[in-house]
Image (cartoon, rainbow, N blue to C red; front, side):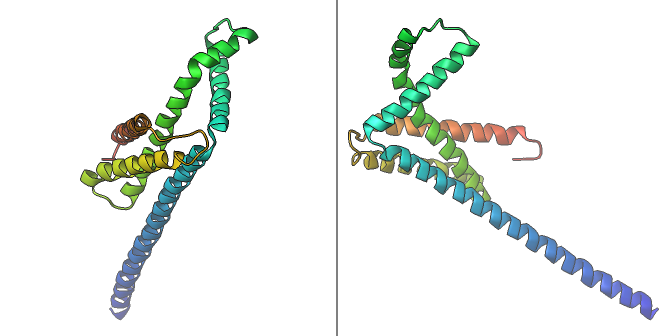
Length: 185
């Protein structure tokens, strides 16, 4: 009888401590996940800052290289009948769009990272989207002001709108992705 009582008490004690260990382990994992999520936001913001700090000439050169890569990739899938002499014409035609798509893409990614970070931090769904958008929008404004100090660069309201559009698109894709995964809200 005493043995049964001791076994019962030990079992109750062990299971409650095991439950606490599991909860503590989950808490530590959640904290690590939250830390990594915010680290990704900060690193991506640093990348945007770095890209915006480039002088206009360097930034345009990077865009031209990206445009070349895109044109060559499209040409390998759908032949554009590009000769070396007309490659410059194609680059001239599309470089502007690639540069502006860069704004959308940077803030598309930032928004996905921001939504994830706010979600992991415990933000309620009603505030999650607002906080994420405000973070992206305010960073877009500050980024444009930062460009004012770059050689040959300047702030642009249209670029803030492009950045905000990229953020909204990123948040929408995140939302769609979270709806597709089973068991997630």
